[in-house]
Each structure stands twice: as structure tokens, then as C-alpha cells.
Length: 519
Ligand code: ADP
Image 1 (cartoon, protein in one colour):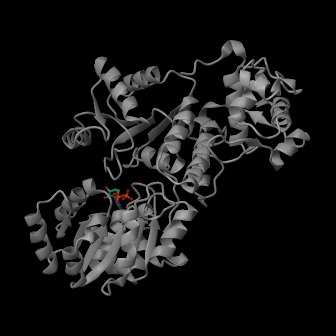
Image 2 (cartoon, protein in one colour):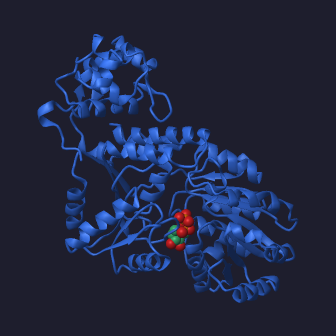
Image 3 (cartoon, helix red, strand yellow):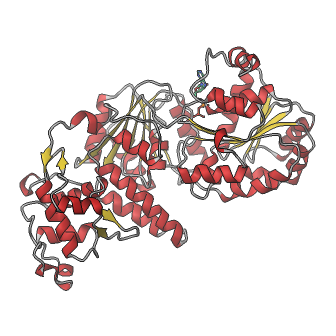
């Protein structure tokens, strides 16, 4: 780290010291090594390209799919006295031309553009002929087909950019990257392994919670009652769900904003502004809201239903607590959420291979909702985070569940039922057989003839379903990918069946009489 860069941090940005990973990232870039920075939301990724952008000669081009954020970034740089601009479709043609001329005259240190800008020859010709400091790909996971928000137009500009001879160094930044995404970005942008800076994903100020078996709208109402002066986001899975929750709360006199893709651009802009400026402290939204929203005092993010995968969940939940203060991320789970997500995957336009991939990710999300282990650890494991720690001590599983029950015997019954059903059926059918259901399908498949039929009839079908999901989440039972994942035994199941491995649960399965009222 040169003194020059530390000085930039202090004089331009007014910060005392670097955050984890910033120094290494800036170092690599300054030495003109293509660099990938993987840092959590709020980790300070912008500074990682802004400081070398200032210290290197020429203009830095920042490509970002987030048009809504460009203006904020540019305004922020201006407030530090740094000349910056953006070009996107929100500007008139003449304004775009003026800015292009200024770029050609080297008036700017930073230029923010969306990937689509590279389809304009006028733009490409302009940047071809000026000295460039670097090209940065913000939200770089969008260039990877393995990313949860793949944008083909983003990926397709990479080969053309590589043909420009005046780009000294490429920078990629993301908060969300699995091994597959990291390796894809590395290959695409020729980034060496030792130029990948991965600070780990843990956000120590966030506490994760799973809430099950409660009426969701009652839960939300009482939560809001208890957190009156705080700002928060409630994510729903569908526009319809957002509309209905918005209506319910508004009727009860709660002031809330609403944001989804079904609203006009004006309505969305207004809702976003009201939320950002704390005129309305609660935002009800679908996942259309929030990518890149830099509101620091969000104290909670509630997911009204389970999202499609852990990448999206962590990114959305991660909008809480950007200021580093303790914040809550609450997921309200109900079994119907699984059906909805499967439906959304099924009716999407993805090809079969991509659908399989989505089903695999969905299964990890389902497991998250059913594990009895530490929720933070479960998320970090998913991202192959190498930080070693046992449990976070903050999540609902760490805090709330104290008593454990030995359920080895019941687990053995479930596993042997799966075996006797020929490992050909999914969670729902298995629960029905264990319950001894009179469902016609059970008779059709002659599953009422097997010895485990009705073996756990003292429990409810929902309780048994929950239980099977728990065994999957704990990897004591495997599932085959797909729309209707079939249950399979794995090595751990065999150990349990042989009595070599006991199974403990924080709460006992739910007997008939005490069945929770799932909505
Ligand atoms: P990210 O893009 O990783 O989500 P940002 O770049 O938007 O995060 O930074 C999040 C916040 O942290 C911003 O308000 C930024 O000014 C602040 N920040 C970044 N680096 C530092 C630092 N070294 N010291 C203090 N604050 C910082």
C-alpha cells in the first residue's frame, strides 16, 4: 500500500482506515492485476475501485446493471470533489452527447454505465480513444451464468472489451459468489487465484431467524407494533402477496410503502424515495426492490415467504444493518412456500439444465428452513466460506432452542419407510404412508401393504413432513433433484438405521392434538 492511497482514503473520503479486504484489493488493482473482490454487502466495495481509479491515470469505467444507483454514486463522488458522470437511457440524446464529448475531453475520473451502453458505437469509440485507468464490473455475479441474477447482455460485452487495447486492468466486485460463480468470473476476466480477495460473508451484526407455524400476517402486525420507530423491508414472493399485505396494513393505519414491477415507474420512484428518506419507514416489496439500495439504517428484513435460493435470500436479508448496528433477518416459512417456488421454476423459460440447477438451489433453501443447526453457519457453509466457527450465538436456532430430544427411533422408522417405498417417492407421499393416510394414490401404488404404513400415525401429516425435511436438512436423508425430488437413503441414513448414529432434535415432532396451525 502506497502512502498515496492511504492519503486518498483520508483526504477524499474522510475515513481513518481500510476495512477488511480493501487494502489488498486496492493493492492488486494498483499493480495492474485483474482483481476480483468478494465482500459482503456494506463491506465497502466501491472504494476498492474508486481509490485506484483516482491514483491511476485516466478515466475509470464502472459497469453496473443498477441504473437506479448510478446517479447516487456520481453524486457521492461529486460531494467529495471528484469529477464523475453516468450515461444511461434516462438521459436525453443531447445530454448523452454532451457527456460523451466531456468524456472524450478527459473531464471525468469516473464514468458509470449499464452493460447496454456498449451496444452504442459512439460510446465505444469515445472510450477507445482516451486513457483509461480501469474497467470495473460491479455486481459481477450478473456476468456469470451460474449467478442468481445472470444477465446475458452483461456477459456478452466482455469479449469486445478485451479487444480494446487501452484497458490496463479489469476489476470485478460482488457480494454474492459461490465457487462456480467465482471460477466463472476468474476465467472470463483472466483473474489469477491470488488476485481474488474474498473476505468471507459473515455479517456479524445480523441475526437470522426462522419463524414457522404462525399466522404470517398476525406475526407481522405484532412485530411492527413492537418495532414502531424502526425502518424495515418486508419481502413477498409475488406482487399479489405484496398488494394484499399492503392493503391489510394500510387498513389498520400502518404507514407503509409498496414496490413491485407491476407499478408504474413513477409509483416505484416515489415509493423508493419515501422509504430512503424515512418518510415511510416500512417497505413492502418483491425482489424487484433493493438491488444496490444504500439505506444504512434498515433494522430488519422480513421475508413473508421463503425465497427461491440462498443467494437471493442472503442478498435481500443483507440489506439490513449496513451501518453495522444489530439488525434482524426473519424468514416466515410455511410449507406452501415450497410449492410456490417450484411452480415459479417450472413455469419459467429456463432450459431443463437450468431448472435442475434451480431445484438444487431451492433444496438448499428448504434445508435452511429446516435445519436445527446454526443458521449463520448454514449460510456460510453454502458459500463455502472458510471462516471457521461453530455457532453464531445470535440466530433463532442458537438462541431459542435449548432442549433436545432423542428421536433416533422415529428417524429409523422414517428411513426404513423410505427404503420400503423403493426410494421412488417424495416427502409428501412418505409422510402420508407413515401417517397411514387413506389417500387414493397410496392405494393405487399399494403402499398401504408395506409394513411401515401407519407406523407413525400418532403424528400429523404436517408434523411428519416437517420431520422428513429436518432429516434432509441434517443430511440424514438424500433427495434427488427435480420438480418432485424422490427420497433416497445415503451413508448417514445407513448409520442411523444400524443404530450407529443417534438423531437429536430441538423440539419433539408435533403430535396430532398440538398441531400448529400452518396457514
Ligand atoms: P458495498 O458496495 O460493498 O455494499 P459500499 O461501497 O456501498 O458497500 O460501502 C458501504 C458503506 O461503507 C458506505 O457508506 C461507505 O462510504 C462506507 N465505507 C466504505 N469503506 C469504508 C472505510 N474504510 N471506513 C469507513 N466507512 C467505509
